[in-house]
Length: 399
Ligand code: AMP
Image (cartoon, rainbow, N blue to C red; front, side, top):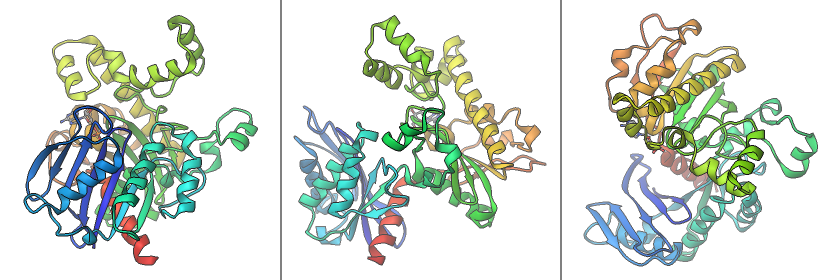
């Protein structure tokens, strides 16, 4: 069985074709600058190629992807009918879905009704669905896998804010959480690695990438997570502020002459470690600048690692303990300095890391647990595409 995984953004579209016998991506790539001048497709199949071609919309982008997949030189399949199903990453399930679902017309309409909750991402995700429906053979099953769904198990006291309850009832203002596929994947991988059933474990998963979120996973279920109503909340990120005193929004509006949406844009695009350091949103650049004595780069790293550490402690308290701490995503998997700073000082709660193992990069899971640690400390590469493909397979096989 071969499953095409699609992650459609507003001007980009990433894809992987996964062979479910081996769970290996036999082709992957992405279209950039959809709807803009200079659009191109980077495809890695039998060969790696960059194809420059106009892509006025997502439908033309999907057509190019499919052409690349069946191409005699760099393709990996001989016809589109070899694609058994398509799994789509969809950012927001609202309160409507607590798991992945077959994308019927009715489900797509429900997803559309949740656009208000993710105005930047949901329309792009749904455009990707429509484009695939238009281009793939009729009847090719499509499945939606939501970023929020894994967090639907959070208890009420973790997702309700301290504002009038009517605002939750009327407008669905609550914590939703994101990166669900990643938190789910790495917590399941951790349980497998430890030879335990997920129901026996209390795990804190740190997905630290360009967007970062930290989750408390108790007995295989998300019970709290740092991203919030939108992916702006939680720890400071590449360009996103993370949590703030809400009164700062009015203050910033007054000082900069912003209206509220300009202010939110500022908090999304000009803030985080980029705004703090004035250097970069990329942790490789921050590390280099800090080593050369740049105080603001060092400060950005300190604010980030300190905030992550606070979440780890908070979630251990929320769960009444912790058996395993997991790092994943671009920073979590690669930045041993960030990991070492988050881990430093957590010995009081039984977390001891082996700093030599932490400094080494390995393929697959890196167990960086130190001698005498009560808590396992693991670095686990995430694979959100595989979660999407597995869910798609399961749903399609059941249907
Ligand atoms: P992601 O969103 O998971 O793809 O993570 C992307 C981010 O990971 C980049 O913006 C970098 O900040 C960070 N990153 C990637 N590779 C490294 C590395 N080798 N060392 C430190 N940070 C890295």
